[in-house]
Amino acid sequence: DEKDLVDGKLAHLLKSSKDLEDIIESKRPEKVKEGLGYNAVPPPAADLYLSPKKDLSWTGLPEFVDDTMTTIVGLRLL
Image (cartoon, rainbow, N blue to C red; front, side):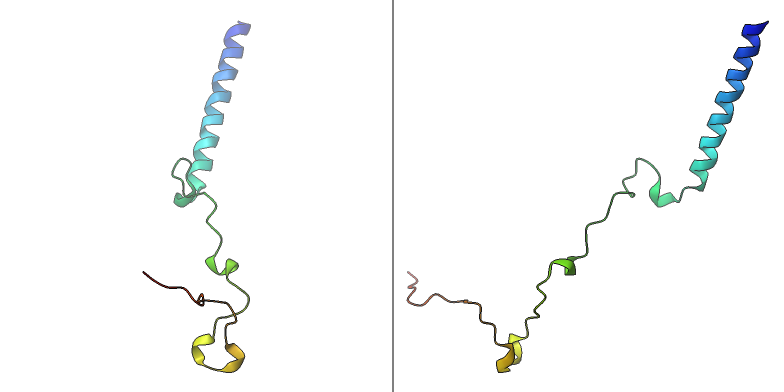
């Protein structure tokens, strides 16, 4: 009967779809399996946000003196 034929084709389609999903899942590397959180985008490298001017003030050379104000003149500690 036609209903049995359609049911059989549907069952075959569902099984084929499941088999395809299993094949795809088996090819996926372990680190990117769904639900494990390993496929999240990693944070950007820390050195992307560093100042383009390197701090070489510790060398004592005049060309590397840091002109940033680091002390407040006249501040009294209690």
